[in-house]
Amino acid sequence: MSTPHPRIAARMAGIAPFHVMDILARARQLEAQGHAIIHLEIGEPDFPTPRPIIEAGMAALNQGDLHYTPALGLPQLRSAIADFYAQHYGVQLSAQRVIVTPGASGALLLALGVLANPGDTVLLADPGYPCNRHFARFIEARTLAVPVGADTGYQLTPELVERYWAPGIKVVLLASPSNPTGTVVPDADVRAIAGICAARGATLIVDEIYHGLIYEGSYHTALAHSNQVFVVNSFSKYFQMTGWRLGWLAAPEWAIEALDRLVQNLYLAASTPAQYAALAAFMPATLAILETRKAELKVRRDYLASALRELGFDLPVLPQGAFYLYAGCGRFSQDSFAFAAQILEQTGVAITPGVDFGTHQAQRFVRFAYTTSLPDLQEAVRRLREYLQP
Image (tube, rainbow, N blue to C red; front, side):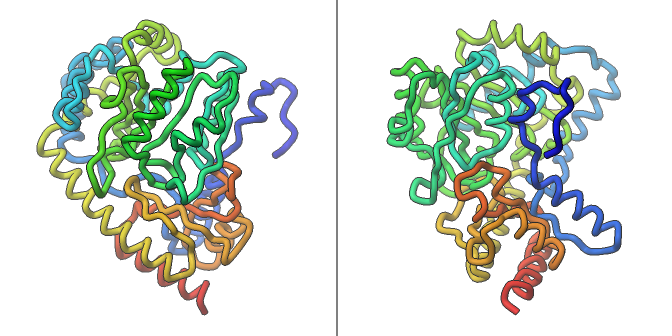
């Protein structure tokens, strides 16, 4: 990293770039030179936004009523989200506790902004999504990253939370399913961790943005276990509205007024046409499309997990959700960034180095996103086999 300009705030030293962006930039260069690149580095489904959502957005544009919505979101959409929890999870959630946000990132920043003071500590898992720790740094909070491995499904457990608890912890952050591992926190553990937080005067935030993409077993939202948790969700992943930039936050009643004030000052309101489009996300026709695509993602996961193991990658845990495989590359390299760069140059397959997701064994892991077609995944495996097992 170059020497920062003296006018750049000191906090920026703790906010690292995504290393995968270097991989992506090089992949684009190679494509411009005529190379066929298979992108397994991007955490974005290759499916287009379902047609009913697009049509709802177009209808809103044509009607022309695109003024600001209330800061907390379009009332109809807040109600639709609350109804989704009732129908999908059997959880009664007041629409007044739902805040529509510009992506899940907006929701997480809001939650941390109202919960953590400068110097407070956020407890989270390592590996984990890098923005979690960077948002904490942005609000001048600290992070305590707990090293997690395959033995706990790369997730925090009640035992780990108790073991690593320290003075100053005000927030515990879970992600279920997680990026980069795709693993899920068991319901009993979510309930127990919520109880630990309540007993110690801290607050639990649960990132559920991949919740619709869980392939086996039954599961509940964290809201089923406590009405004091903050739940972050998104229209990007399961609902496949990445570029629409829309998410939501479900929060306890006592936090809504403070969140409202913060929304007004940070971004005023989420995108109006995106909110009208999202009203169609919960329609039966849309959900039928999404479930078909979810089934296709499971086929991709099963194929790629088996293939990577045959190639020599370490994959001790089959992820239950999301669309990632966090695979050990220690048999091939002890430098995940150099390995990812080497794979790209030699095979034209782009993957994400583990160093983007923390420090715990990060040099020994890479992330594969199965967000491209099965034929592309098969071609990627063929190239990797040719290179790794000549």
